[in-house]
Image (cartoon, rainbow, N blue to C red; front, side, top):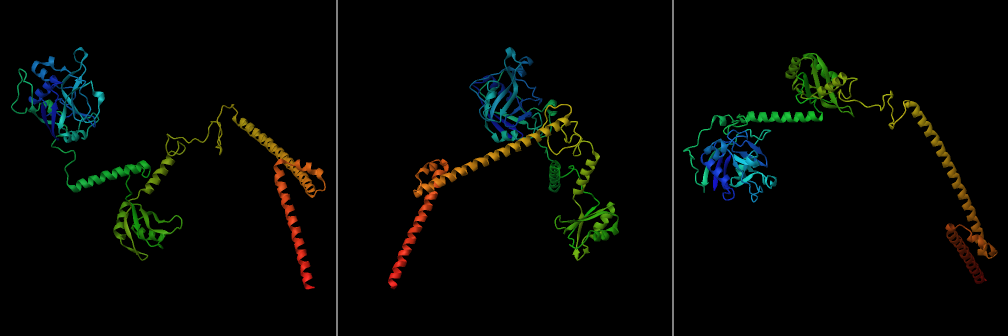
Length: 481
């Protein structure tokens, strides 16, 4: 009830559910016994879902059951044994592929089977025949699951079944079954399915130095593509100019004219620029010299390296900068499309006006509503209305201030009346003015009363102090006498 499958990446042991799926288990065991699966490749690998094999043609449409091999093409397929107890719950579940063109509308199976590489695939339940599970060899299953595949799921490098060994077979051999003494040779159809053999390598076999060089080239290409995407390079395949020298370790006092005069003896110079600080204007100690010819540039490189200039021994190398090329490329692209499009691209359009009638761009944004044909007159009308509305607003503000002043003036008068009435009442001269005190504004009544009460207390204390001082002075005069 177990089968050992030897593949090109490792071995697997599959245990079969012979009691629940006797027909399917019989078919699988006898196909393994006659070496039918030998040299079959895993033609459909879907990562973390399943791996499928059992088709000698590697197309997903071939293969036949053991009954078709024994009794002819009329019994190429047999009815699928789908059991509700058997589920696709765990990784390593082995199921028979099912086609939907069987008799009476039921599914049928042949020789193709698949092994799940994911868990809880309950949507497969009731559609495919679960007849076994992987008992050993999950590392082999993981290798098949992680292989490189094309768009259709076919691995680039072939993973094939080498041999199948039956560990336990509870079924008797059907009549007419011929078991070969050795593994049969692959047919022409099987040989045509070979892509990259198991003994071949996807990577070329090169010395370590060459492999490191290829690796660096690929990394450089990836980095150049990234710089192109963020806009630092005009295109990824751009190369630095061959007629530009990079000069470094210059003295601070060295000028552009001096450097150009020294290097001009090797040929015509298009430009000589010492890079300076933007704020201070001081030299940063390096420069770029562009020659007209590549040969003159090479001659200057060999002659001027390690030469002493202004008490400094300079270093000369070929420039690796493409900054100037990028600027020239941008400016030429902008000039090329001048008047067409925006930003150097004809597919872009600069939106400076909302309506076709607006000729001059405005600094302010206008709201777009349904207007009449004469839009300029309507704008003037809106401006006049805004002007009148601003005048009426200022008049309202003026009236509001005038009313506020009148109310303040009335409140001050009422306060003064309350103060006079309180003074007369406190002195006891005119008790009839007590009414005016109560007629003062309620908000100020308590505060004013406290204010004048404090003043009366101060005057009373001042009178007591004077009486005491007089008595003391009389005592002192009496003592002198």
